Image 1 (cartoon, rainbow, N blue to C red):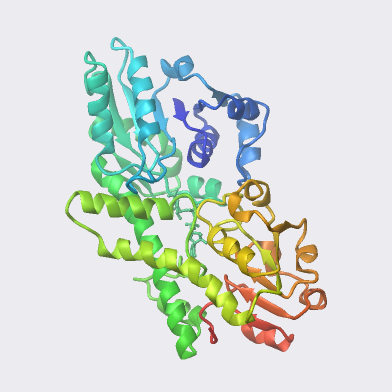
Image 2 (cartoon, rainbow, N blue to C red):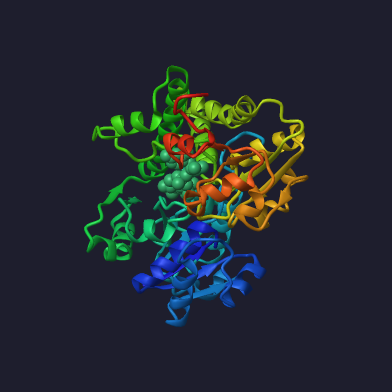
Length: 444
Ligand code: UGA
């Protein structure tokens, strides 16, 4: 089987590397010449554990290649995956589909009406109905094209998480395929056969259903996080412990223990964008989702409230110097998109004497961002902490979980840690003499 994957972002590049690892021939295509040149020279544009090794291995085995030209391998491709971005359109909060339609146009131009039909598969997160709309768009753009005879569009949403993308692709909880014909079904069945052998559930549904499953999954997970964050606020006021509450409810098989970690609010390139898009989808079809609307509102407010939490813990901040540990939206990524740090840090810059920042992977991207103008960048955790009045931990990188707390205490002007990810135990911290403020565990 030969596959073309258009878009070499997280989803495209990871899917390409993993499909080639399954043994298929994959060409990853991107318009960005620089990116493709770098990929051809073994330089990976994103920080993702094990991705570099997987790419190198499959390039060496000649199963994976990179190109700027879709036309080159088009004729030989059994399936063409669209994995371009669908960012929020800031004018209307909907998913911006301009890259999707640019690709659809390019594909329509390349289809040979005398050849076998082409299966086009959307991997990007796209609003319900997009598969159908892409088909209509292509039929309208090139009038001689015929659905089924020349091409058709299937939906195969991706559920991988940044930071564990390879593992998520190789060992998914399930694969969702939205198809409108046996032709599409048989191609996707072949592509996912390696997972079928591991007994991964592969669900076939109508295209619209698959498109909605993706938004519903992200909407539900975002709701779960927002719910536990609200419970954490209640815990702080009544003296309960959110970690135990999460464990207590998570043991109920109907609830499940995952995605019940309280924190400074969800960020990233998916949950914020997809909850906004889902809200717009609901409004558009006359089925407004009050739950999703409040999740968006509550999550945005939460990021702002974290500054209040810091102020409440430290008192007047005017003459204080703070050390920030972690700025990416979660660990094991350099992705800064919609990270809570983008809301918290600009405010801290305004009201403190100094903000020192260290993150294991996010700093090179963050250094270019206006939100961080005025921070002092540090190269290492202890250097960052040295001579500051408190630590504010925003992202739970592993290297922050095992700090030498005796050393930390001697470096800080005062032993204060505000931990927005609950990586330490309050009892042990107070035994060590720290003023330790965390989320949903006793004091506000
Ligand atoms: C998310 C989904 O988890 C993936 O299944 C999906 O494929 C992906 O979006 C996507 O649509 O492409 P991702 O954004 O990489 O993946 O990251 P998550 O691990 O889901 O974390 C998202 C945010 O929620 C982070 O800011 C994280 O810190 C926060 N979070 C997560 C919590 O605050 N608490 C939790 O219990 C879990």
